[in-house]
Length: 122
Length: 284
Figure 1 (cartoon, rainbow over the protein chains, first blue to last red):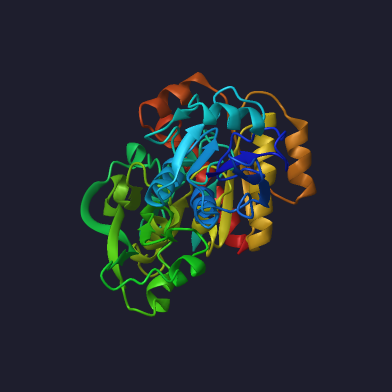
Figure 2 (figure 1 turned 135 degrees about the vertical axis):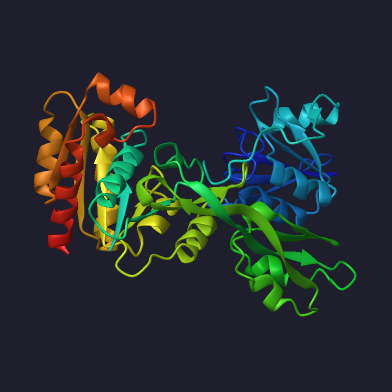
């Protein structure tokens, strides 16, 4: 099963990035083999709609789930339409830690946006 | 002649100054001015000018509506939209109305003609006669709607002055898109500020906007309780004339809180503001 995590650097020991749309990197991991690949988030500095751009990008990674700190309303709608499940980091600090908890079902799965939209107000 | 009153920092007395200038001119300058409340996110000039609003018009932006029976999810619409207001995820095309700027590119480029544009009401324009014969119009953005600029643009196009009528535009605070949209096309920019580090910081930003847009500007220092040499030095360096200094006085604060203009509180302000206007007229 392939999942995507938002991170501040490449690699499984990378520190998590709590931002979804404006994360530095998208870390795509096969949780069975722990093979990973990393993608720079080209939409990190988008003027607006960063969450939607990120969701569009992630859709092409062919993943079943996304793990991040917060999912805004636009990102939530887009990921839900794409059929990608969303989970929160909680107090995880590294990607590998989050993967371990994800495997044993200890991450919080979300069914609604976790915060209000920014609407261009940072 | 179009004069815009802006400030950078909020709460420095833009609307107090703009309304006072309007009432001062109404007493002398036929026809009375046209006052445009362009702070569409939080319009408040009606508290001073008491207009009887009798004309209204909706502001709507054309946003895409996708016919899923024709859409092949080719993604051309999402590719062209720089605001990410339309996106294609597999077999679904999603529209995010609050991000749409209404440019129409998605509809124009859709090879299947699956996109039609439908009006999305985002605010309202209102017009009416205010006190002392001041013509008044304002835009009001719907609550929760993030984009103010389309409402401001519609307001400026809708509320046209009569021949020879002075236009006063009351801008929103800050120096972002809504303020630029309000200032653009003005002949003069009146910057209301206060003698504090915050006031000066934001005055610098507002003065930069004026310089970038090539619009002459002057300053009104409000709530001046003691000299603030840094502010005077900045104005001198940037050749921004200080056109009026309004002292920090309890009587003024109390009057403004009751919806009075400065000249209702101290009639001599009528002459002060007419002098400010004459200075601007000579400058142009």
